[in-house]
Amino acid sequence: MSESSVPQQDKGLERPRCLYCGEVYEPGDVARHTKPVHCGPCITCVDKPACFSCRLMYCVCEVHRYRG
Image (cartoon, rainbow, N blue to C red):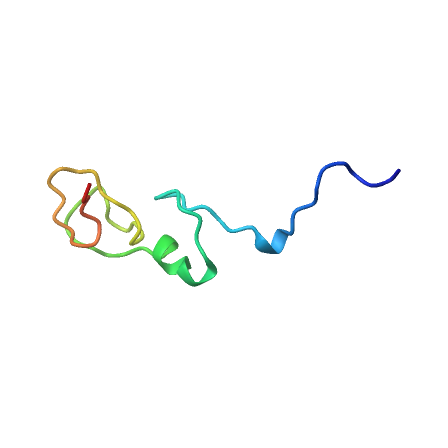
């Protein structure tokens, strides 16, 4: 009885969860969740990745402006 009762997960199938938006992303979407975007004058979202949604009411950045 050397086998564990806990099912093993394939480590190759685990996908990372984004620190900024919380989405689980595919390898092809890494840049959208990790690469900083130099977006403009807003101090809240400067150097955040494209997936980040700024919650600042006066954010003028086209990439990060909150649309919710």
